[in-house]
Length: 185
Image 1 (tube, rainbow, N blue to C red):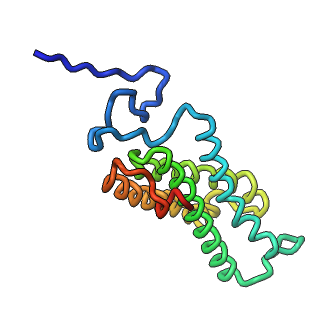
Image 2: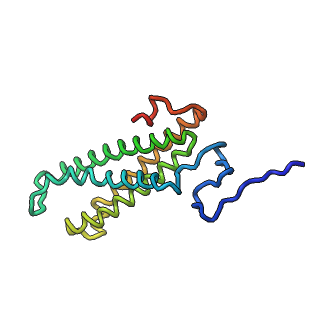
Image 3: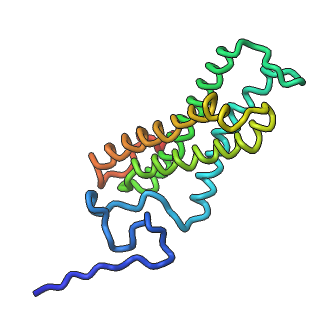
């Protein structure tokens, strides 16, 4: 009779992190999707989330006069902000998730994408509440209806990119990231 032993998670681990020795049920040998105890991982995640907010904000500055009035058509401005935010978001996600893919090619990247998108969503909402709302005088309700709900595209796109990386990872779990992989971006 053989006995099977598994390690149990310690109290210092996040409940979302898999304990050492416990494999992901659907992906044997899969690495955890985030390095919870690594301050550099948190720094990369938070810095890119803030950069995602800063890029469209900085692009928008020339379109306002000193009195805070928009100098171009409102719909043209909204289109410009949507395009610049989408482009910045996709490029930052590909770079961030691509590097994580190179570090842990067997990780569950749909979870990493969802987690990254959720954190970046919260960062963008937080920075808007701290900086944008005082500048434009909108109420929180008005902000959410006009701008805030648009940020829900961040976790949607991040999860999609993560899912694509997971599919790529599961197709060749033992192969390192190739030069054509997102890690090379």
